[in-house]
Amino acid sequence: MPSNDEIIEALRPVEDPELRRSIVDLGMVRTIAVGGDGNVSVQIALTVAGCPLRNEITNRVTGAVTPLAGVTGVTLDFTVMTDQEREDLRLKLHGSPGASAGQGQAHGHAEGRKVPFSEQGSKTRPLLISSGKGGVGKSSVTVNLAVALASQGYSVGVVDADIYGYSIPRMLGADRDPVVIDSMLVPPESYGVRCISIGYFVPEGQAIIWRGPMLHKALEQFLTDVFWDEPDFLLIDMPPGTGDIALSLSQYLPRGEVYVVTTPQPAAQKVAALSAAMAAKVNLPVKGIIENMSWFTGDDGKRYEIFGSGGGQELADDLGIPLLGKLPLVPALREGGDDGRPITAVDPDSEAAQCFQAIARQIAVDLKPRKIFSPSLRIN
Ligand SMILES: Nc1ncnc2c1ncn2[C@@H]1O[C@H](COP(=O)(O)OP(=O)(O)OP(=O)(O)O)[C@@H](O)[C@H]1O
Ligand SMILES: [Mg+2]
Image (cartoon, rainbow, N blue to C red; front, top):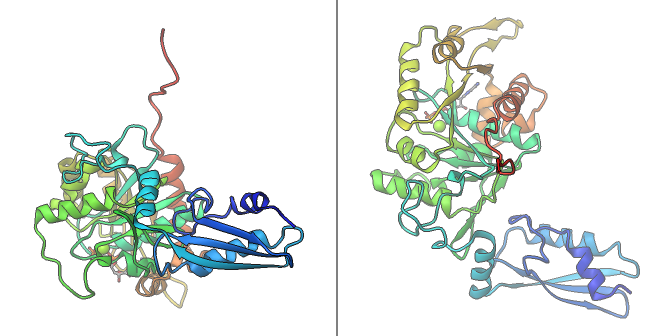
């Protein structure tokens, strides 16, 4: 029969599906009992009652303990952490809200917590997906690019900064609500991408009519109260235009990179001007252009340039930055958005998915900010 210690060691690699940390380290494994018949009973403390991932935890624990010599069966029962235990857990994972209090730009005003992505040492690259005008495919690009980056092995989060016109949960198929552990929000995940959106906090179909300060507060909470756990990329689905939200984000994300989505109409002077104005207003660099709806391939196999051609390249040349890709107009891309099944995840061999993968590689590799300072190099 395995000893309790051996069982603990077997359980150590088992991660909580939401927090992605060892269930042993999180203090979720409560009691272990090995019966004479080889049946192992494990009690697990869930972070919150009614945890939707209880079955997944059961499978993982059973899978880890069953192979041990002498084990004939595994029985789980569940309890729930107390408020105190949840507070301790939140402190351990997310720190104390007051701990990083300060007056700088990137500090949230209510709790005094610093936005983690603003710090010099942060490994997270915030990618702001924006456009000069609405309806060009920002949200579709955000979701598919996020899925592509995740499939390439990066950890990825998405902030739906389009407070009035939120769309990310539906497009990503992330329909589970965030889990609240003490004051920490654990974002739902879909296709390996975690996301947060105002959509989780307002009744379906209700219009949001907040003014600047409320928008600012919501964004701040998305950045500070959510357990992002230092992702490689944090994609921000921007609202159309250059309003309050863009300004707030630039304060919170001084290391942000702007990517502009545009359609292929040539001489889109207005779009170029707006994009440049936005970047100037928020004082963040525009790093690349993504052209969307570039052509439609008919049943005859011919490419039809419904919205003209050359606009993306022209804008890229105007701004002196690369055109990262041209995305075809494909019904499956829209359907995937409507059904929460992003084309990049469900049809990875399609032309559109391949294009998103190529754009993701360029952003991850070619446009990776060069290190200009290394703390380990010193002149004595
Ligand atoms: N390449 C494409 N092929 C087919 N449909 C597309 C494509 N890109 C976007 N769409 C569809 O066009 C519509 C608008 O796209 P999306 O919502 O991504 O744009 P947006 O720029 O985020 O809009 P908004 O400014 O309203 O936030 C959606 O229905 C989407 O599914
Ligand atoms: Mg949108």
